[in-house]
Length: 172
Image 1 (cartoon, helix red, strand yellow):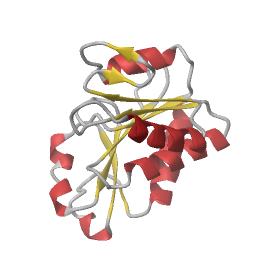
Image 2 (spheres, rainbow, N blue to C red):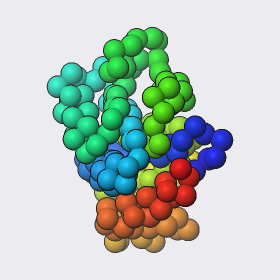
Image 3 (spheres, one colour):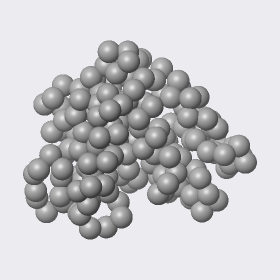
């Protein structure tokens, strides 16, 4: 984690139905279980505004896992009820810093520069390893382990959660 940050920010990226929200829940739960103030940011990367019921569903999942602060953003609409032309992840992290979280988990924002966990579900997902920066590990089916190259590779969410949580503890 970049130590110049207010707190660790870790991104979970992958395509739709790759398990991002499930991994977010497990990371949030483990962090809050250990007494960390945990926040989440979800990016609606499918174009258009996030649907209210969709936001409520995923935000509720994050909150039930233990996040004390959660939001969703898409096409400039931020579900903290704020609006401007568009929102960068950097701007959202700065807003979150005012709430003093110990860690922020981010679902999406593939092109942002924070440390990333890449989820591979299908062969079509493998180019994410080439197209994204600051990858700290990869989660996918065992047959993708060769594709991960030098990145630490895991085939279960439990392994990734333990790996990431050690990094979070070292940063807080």
